[in-house]
Image: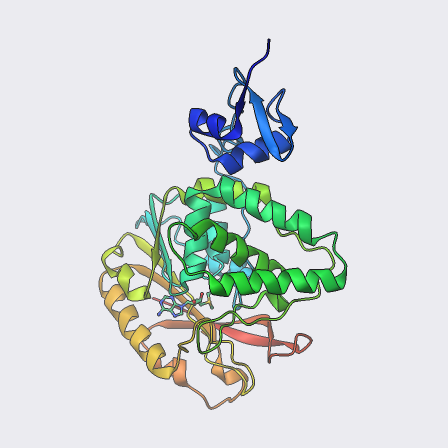
Length: 355
Ligand SMILES: C[S@@+](CC[C@H](N)C(=O)[O-])C[C@H]1O[C@@H](n2cnc3c(N)ncnc32)[C@H](O)[C@@H]1O
């Protein structure tokens, strides 16, 4: 007679989480698994299914990776320009990559799709964002199970129920403090909110509470499983740090390519997009960053820094030209939101500053 074990026993036996066992059962990947009431039972001699991560080989290093969140100031539009600045040949070899203000990581994921660096370092001052990077690195299966469930619940709902659900997740996100125990839940809420909120904004009030309203997407992809699995795989080789960009100083040396993309100086009076966190990135912060750039320049690193061009608004504003007069400054054209209204987009110049 066939004998069965519980999902918990299977989880212990295969050294995976109970939630992962439930997902594998619901995906029909465990032959003979049956649901009794609201619990799965699994044939005692069932074999552990091969995890998708172990069969998706990246030996040719050519998987296409996309940022897993939308991020204000995301650099997707500038990738071609940034790529031209990557030192890939010449007599000097750069084996390390550092992006200390990583945000959504548009360049990082482009780099990880195509280029080989021996060591990589990313950081950000946004603790929820960095938690999500860490959870994707260390616990992607549980994360996927959670956001898949949210997607399955949310998408079939009508507008009113979606609103109710969105705000209940936002409340849970704000009410749950980040600990080892809540890390996966918080990363799941973070991705859900990013994919369903207004314009993918991350904005917090003075108390640090996320306060962006729901967006108006008809059919958002909340769980891009394949991309998350691929990202998880490449992040295994990346040091992920929560904190100030200056912590990366010890990592950076003469064989490091550094890309820094600080929060913008607001380009119009109504654009308050420097508030990624409750502290804004004012001119004194830009000056502190320029000093840091000088320090790592002295170490011999290759540096690229991007920023908005204040001359877009005031042709006489030479703030960055003065601050970085010892460096090369290139102006490139990009389309940006020029104030907080979604339809108010325009062509503006961005600055690429390098040594
Ligand atoms: C313009 S965004 C980066 C966007 C990114 N390049 C992308 O493609 O999505 C700037 C980032 O710097 C982070 N940041 C702000 N102050 C910081 C600090 N002192 N140290 C590290 N990161 C900081 C913000 O949280 C934000 O994610």
